[in-house]
Image (cartoon, rainbow, N blue to C red; front, side):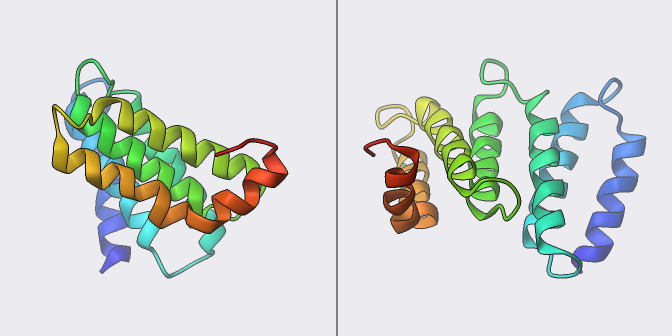
Length: 143
């Protein structure tokens, strides 16, 4: 049950604080972001905002240098959340999604992580696909 999971992740965040347990805290933030992304109850727009905030908090610990794979996964999750985002300007949200996916792609290279690279590459196409092509006209960029 996602509601119970969210409550437990929130409780865990108060026990495993960023200052005392940064890795556990970041993992909890990632889990919380995923739960909000999948949440059905409540306002979808608000749930996505909460997911984005949680992923951004996780990225304060999961740096590209220190935790490259966790950083990549969190960037990918953030990209998915931005691509689904309801609030704000649609074109800007798509730009933020593309940026997050490109960040993830910078670490997941074909030589170092071929399977992970393929999964990351599929995200912009599967999650943004036609909307990117449509929005690119609005954004004024060729994709």
